[in-house]
Image (cartoon, rainbow, N blue to C red; front, side, top):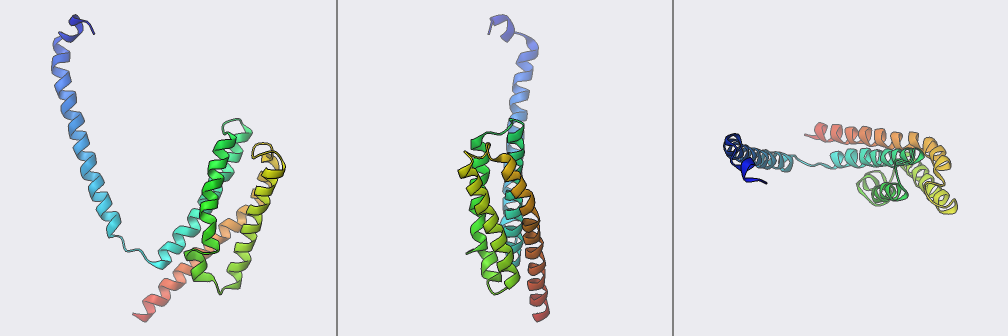
Length: 175
C-alpha cells in the first residue's frame, strides 16, 4: 500500500471504527451462541422426541440423496457428491434395525413391513449402482427406484410421529 493511501484522513478514522464494530459483532455472536447452547441443553429429551427425530431425519437424508441424483443429471453433482449422501443415508438406516425406532416398535408388524420395504429398496439401489458402473451411470434407474421408495420413507416419518404421539398421550394419562 502506498504512503499516500495510508495517510488519507478517512482511512485513519474508518479503520478504528471498523475494528470496533468487528469486535462488537464478535462479542454479540459469542453471547448469542452461549444462550442458544444453554437453551438447547435445557430442552428435555424424551424417547418420543427421539422417535420423531430419527424418523424425520431418515426421510430427510433420503431426499438429500435423491436431490444429489437429480443434480447429477444436470452435471451439478459428482459421483463423490452422491456417494456422500448415500453414506449419510446409510448412517441413519440402522435406526430401523437397532436404534430408538426399532427399540420402540420391535413388536409391531406394521413397522417390520415398512422397515423391510425400505431396507430392501435401499439394497436394490446399491446393487443398481454397483452393477451399472456407479451412481451417475445408474441415475435414471435409481431415480425410478427412489420414486417408488419415497412413499415408504414418508409413511415411516408419519408413523414415527403418530406413534410418538401415542406414547406421549399414554404418559400424560398416567400422570
